[in-house]
Image (cartoon, rainbow, N blue to C red; front, side, top):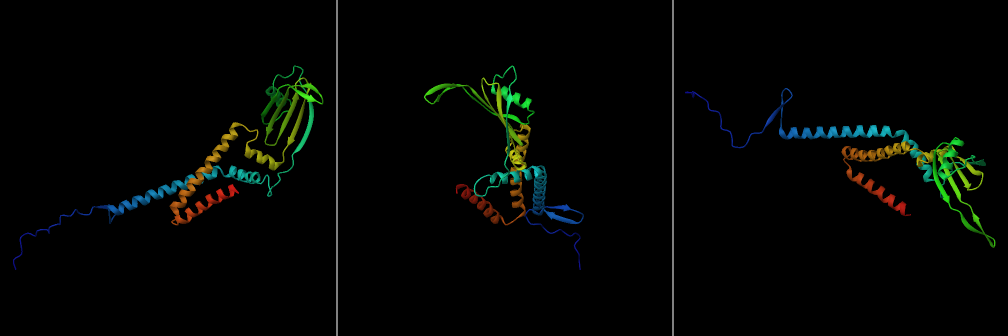
Amino acid sequence: MNAPETIKPPRTSNASPMQYKEHGAHRLIDDADQAVRKNRSRRATFIKWLRKIHGWVGLWGAVLGLLFGTTGFLLNHRGGPLRISTGEPQVSQMQLALPAEGLKSPKELGGWLKHELKLEGNPGRVKREPARAVAWGDQKTMQPEQWTVMVASPSGGVSAEYWVGNGFVSVKRTDNSFLATMSNLHKGVGLSVGWVLLIDTLAGSIILLSLTGVLLWTELNKRRTVGAVLVGASIVAMVVCGMM
């Protein structure tokens, strides 16, 4: 038998060949498989960062969230048929002599009371009623100008009433119970701007926890219809209960 001197390689078709890339030592994967793996890697990285954000934000707001959850429950039941009492405040009154040089404004009265009585908290509501004529039986008399000052703190408050021309001011002190003090912390009564900004960070944390929680649920749970039903039911319950 006569063998050919050369062996020609078989012709290849006109279709473009499948592109392969080396993967590891011995395995080849095509472009489609590589794209799927890239998408999976990106999804895993996204879920990893979501979990980190959710965890660290939750840790930041854990203590404040516990405080505000408890006080929010008490504030929600401060009245009505399901009222929960936070205790009766202790009230005391006294008359306090004014300084010899006198006071010129309600604001100055509030500052003097805070210094004189070593009060905590910040001066709150200030009211100034001008002098006016009032009826007394069948006569008319002139009622002097009246000042009302409030100095509030979470643990209690002081209200002062002064009639211009008097040599003294009437002071009423209110001491709150522990539960009432916690509720005032929730409302920010008599607290500084620093506390208000701190609570703003808690509010932002709650928003972030809600968003990251929903994203984590949608990424890790395939039953998205159930999630949509739960969210819709919560919105409907909120609207219905709010309109009752």
